[in-house]
Image 1 (tube, helix red, strand yellow):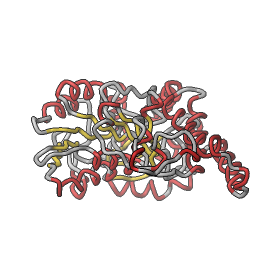
Image 2: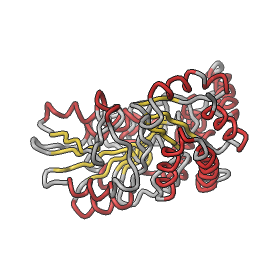
Image 3: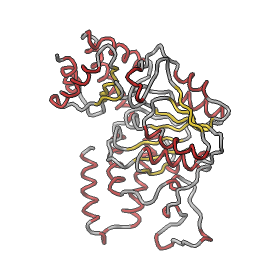
Image 4: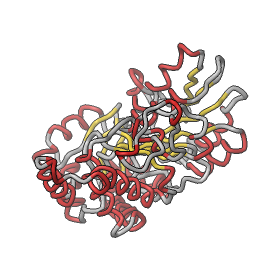
Length: 377
């Protein structure tokens, strides 16, 4: 979390301790409005299409549970999605909705079989064509991650979105692994959800949801009192004769959000917008090139470095570099991960992939320190 967010939390906490200083328009409604505005600028979207959400899971639940499903309808998901993007759809089985899982390349496995999976490469695509071919007459939604959490593969949202539009299918995107580090184009997308705690540099428990108006009109509202079409606290009427909700993204919000969380995430996004996401994305790419070029010199890492460089050149990577255990050895990855803190490095191991991510504040010195860590032994 950036210092600007920490300072904003401190400032707002002091005000919370003096509630007589809290103002309805500026401090309660205004904090939420400023976050929606920052999320809209980040997404290149209309602020009316932004909903404040606690996290990716909650945002996707809003879409999954609010859609007017019919028995036999189908939701299509790639294999190996993070639980945030498959558990909400699992709960629809009682309504007769079928969840269909699609492997993305030959030898693709996940979950308990993940260690036996082959990694994605430039020869195992085109991934989008495989997904589009799998869309059937009962498919109502395609839900997937823009950048996948374990293998780091980046999917082409525009190609998928245009194909979904042509088939009357809604494209629902889990964007948390790319938001804040990749430039977003929402053309063809119906919903985009992201928590704020990763590339957006915000606190855990605060995120946002973007919805296309055509999809939002079909979703059941969450019913929060803040979505009533009123202008001030004094004018709220709880009578049935005035039970009208606004038509914008607020109708999908789940009650009053954390004002501290909203303030912190808003400041974090504003900080990212100053240099711009495109500039951050280019900087990350240069750092990745330096790391992968350096690893090509080491026989243990050379094959994986070449695979990832090829994916990067093809536009298939976000900020996440996921080194597959094949050729390197899972024990080797585990032992390096155990020593990462000695080098002041935070990494993770997910389903046989060692994951390393850069952001805008990282420097070439950070890359060289990472190289030293991976090369040792």
